[in-house]
Length: 84
Image 1 (cartoon, rainbow, N blue to C red):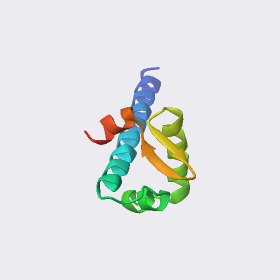
Image 2 (cartoon, rainbow, N blue to C red):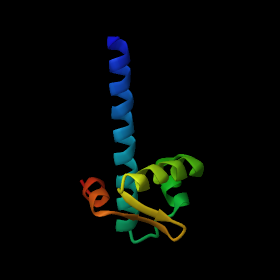
Image 3 (cartoon, one colour):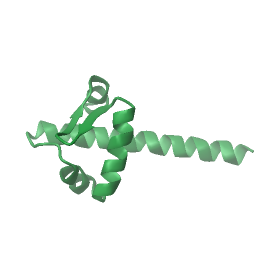
């Protein structure tokens, strides 16, 4: 039973780290004056574009980003995490 709790904790921690990584990448791209595009995020994080889309949908659902066809912007909460 303890192993399951430890595994759940690890998975939760890993997801939180991924969220922070994406938000920081978006923040840095924007700070460089570039448009925040899926391709730019994928290149910066060295991951595939479909993975970026999947995470952006999750971040959008958590109100950390506003993601639509026009692009990606950080919400106030996303900005706090991304800039830290």
